[in-house]
Amino acid sequence: MTKHPLKSGLQSLMISDVPAYANKFFYSLGFLSMTSFMLLLVSGVIMAVFGPDWWLTSSPGRYLRSVHLWATQAFVLFIILHLLIVFLTSGFKKPRRLTWVIGVFMFLFVLMEAEFGYVLRGDYSSQWRALQGADLYNGTGLGYWLHNINYRQIFGLHVVVIPAVIIGLLFFHYLLVRVLGIAKPHRKDVHVPTVKANHTVLFVRGGALIALILGLAAFLPSPYIKPDTAQSIAQSDPKIIAQTLVKEFDHSSDTATYMDSINPYNFDTRKVYINDPYAQYVVLTRSPDMLSRFNALPPAVQQAQTQAAADFFDNSYPAQRPGSANPLESVVVSLTDMAAAGLYEPALDSAPSGGDQSTYSLRFLADTGVLEDNATSLGITTDQYGMLREEKGTIPPGAWWLAPIGLMNHTILANDDNGDRDGAIILGCFLLLLMAFPFIPGLNRLPEWLKVYKLIWR
Image (cartoon, rainbow, N blue to C red; front, side):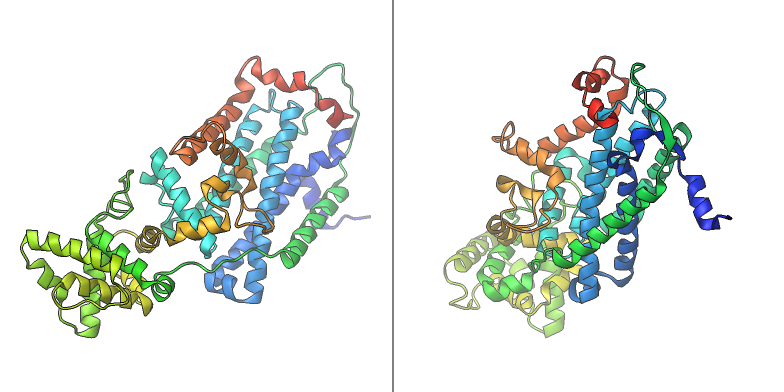
């Protein structure tokens, strides 16, 4: 009977003769990882075509967003389990060292891709994660190249660059496996017969995984919390916006005093948050330019009126409106009204200040303190194991693969003000050690001492 060309082509790409244990579920983990990744590519391309408004507001978009999230959970889970099985069976020994190294590299990029995906989701969780990731990268020096709150850069990395890297690594990884075959027992006293690979069972497992992901996406959808905006804050508590604007003006805000003062955090907050949007306000409303009046005052008077404005917004606003004696108070109230009308953040986006405007908007929201208050109430601050979950009680539980950092934050780094950063450095060093593991004499025999391979090869 003549084989179908497609079936014949697939079989030619796959390994035909394998050790008897290779038909067990444990040896399907690499294939299941690839299946999850293919589902991520398909759902991700569709989401990129239709955009955030579609995946946040329409029923099909929200469902595909959930599919993408559950496929991410599966991808990370199976690649971790796959690495674990290879480790426990010493599948990294010669001549498969390069296969192991490529696999660890792939795991690193998978973790990066997953975290960037969270940043792009378009909800409150993505706002908070973007800020926390930016602090981590800036603390380690990576922030000079990697701007986690620059939406456009992260979008390009998540949609184009990192998937291309993963596809390339996946190709070379499988090419090596295809040439070298499934790793056989490294112990000479262990004899396992060679059998035909059961490709049918493999594809059934892949199909079952896809069905499971599609079902979980329907019954346990991706959580969504409405993002914070300057408009929502100004409408609920205009005092917060006014107080923050004064701090941006006198360079006392968290952004202005950011300790890791590297791009994109080294901009002038007075220019970005006061001067440029207020210039647009004056043109739009044809109002008198109160900021020019303030700037024309002597420095000593400016300093006194800045302090008076801070006191006014701390103690009297919004019950009282400012008078005409202090032009800075009028500027701040105008910008606060602009925020309540939904025009302030768009003004930041179109400001002629250079840099990335999404950075400006998110940093301003962070300076209000509202984002951190919400994170505390949702249970996703560092003290509450941070990025391990979206918010209290949701399924899926978020980035559970970051549990080692959360555990370190509550133990050896409990008194470390830079626990997230130092935890990430420790985790990075561990990944480098994992990559070099096959080449370290003595240590690379650890799986033989554990003897878990007996259960897997049986």
